[in-house]
Length: 127
Image (cartoon, rainbow, N blue to C red):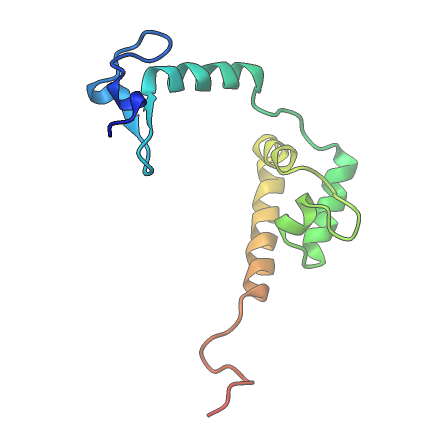
C-alpha cells in the first residue's frame, strides 16, 4: 500500500513535490526543499552569528593556559568547574589580533602534539 505522503503532489505551502524540489529521507519520507530553505533562512534570522570577543584580561588568562599545556577544548569547555572563554569569542579575538593568533596557534599545535600517542616505538608495547 502506498503511503498518503507519497500520493501528494504539493507540500502544505503549495510547492510542487517533484524533481529537484524533493528530498527523500533514508527511511522513505519526503520533504520540500523550498520549505527547508525558508526554514533555514528564518532560523538564521532568529539566531544570528554569535559575536563578541574576549577582554584583554581573559586573553592573557587564555595565553597562560596555552603556555601551561592546555588545549582549546579544555579552555572553551567547562572543565574542572571553570570555562575561560567561549570558542567564538576566542576566534573573534584571534581575527582581530593576528600576532596573538600566531603565538596561540603555535602553542596549540605544540599542546596537541604532546597529547598524541606515539605509535611507532611505543615504550610499553609487548613484543
